[in-house]
Length: 91
Image (tube, rainbow, N blue to C red; front, side, top):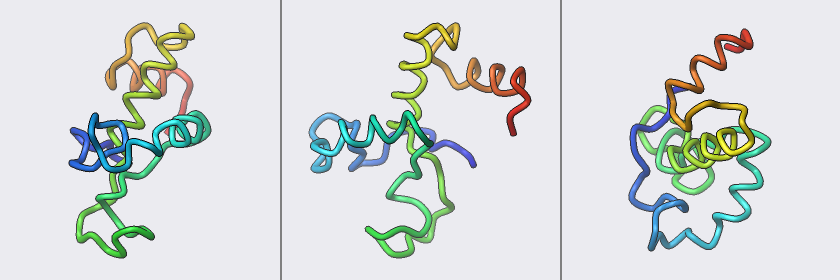
């Protein structure tokens, strides 16, 4: 699934977001699986958004930073993640 190019207006990772209080819970969940942006696809918050589902940019940025800090990724970038994913043979 494609990753959102930028954080949506209400992304919990965006400073001042009304959902910022969810960030610690979502960070823990993001270490187990990628999160789908609540402003895309079909979800329990917005029913059907009319937009194709995308992975949450805030969640992905958190994942990239985490994997970089533990030396799994050389750089906290999408390009580095793509290279690692291909090296590991992940789809």
